[in-house]
Length: 271
Image 1 (cartoon, rainbow, N blue to C red):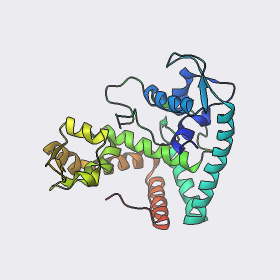
Image 2 (image 1 turned 135 degrees about the vertical axis):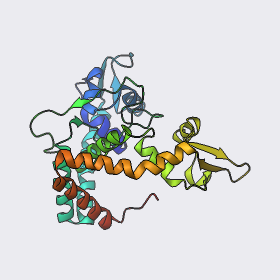
Image 3 (image 1 turned 90 degrees about the vertical axis):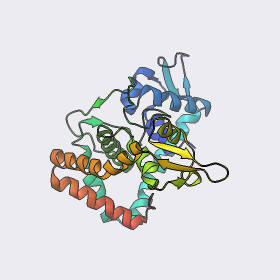
Image 4 (image 1 turned 90 degrees about the horizontal axis):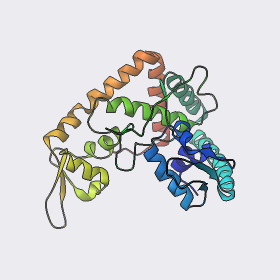
């Protein structure tokens, strides 16, 4: 079965009639680079087919197998949301959906229905010097009615990350998953895991890899420590911007709802 990413960021917008590939970035709110990866996977798995060999033009449509898969995925997403409602409580879930809807409706841009970056290697939302990502302006009227919890959560998180990355040289996801997990004295590489994003941090001078043998380590450089030291301040700055735009009460309700869900769901900490 496709992942939630593949479903939310591609398959949900396809049909048997086909979609012009040039329309996909706007429909999914992804960069062309991010879409290429997802379309290629969908074709390999026989969920979709391309009617042109040009990688950015032509028609992409669901196969018969893909159409059946999409029908099941819609039901699975609803089942997952129902399971969450049981786990965290109906009142908690309702409060979260209402708070998310209030915040997302005020966002100036539309965002993916599952968190996605500019590309496989570039973890930022819009890409540094990249030209493949084009913002999708939010239209007038109700733009949140009928959206799933996953879509609302994703749009809020992606918008927050985009605003954070206007203040930081390191993507929010990389800061939280890697830099924030490295104390000043360093950490064993095995605890972090080697990845393209860690390699990029090393290449751009935010971390250095040291030690030899069976226990190499990862250490913050001065640049990496500066990003970590500014992390909380930048997070608070983005949250304040949201309060100024959407209202103090609206954002406070969202924070409270998220905290209640985290408490009820016993979500693991990354720290």
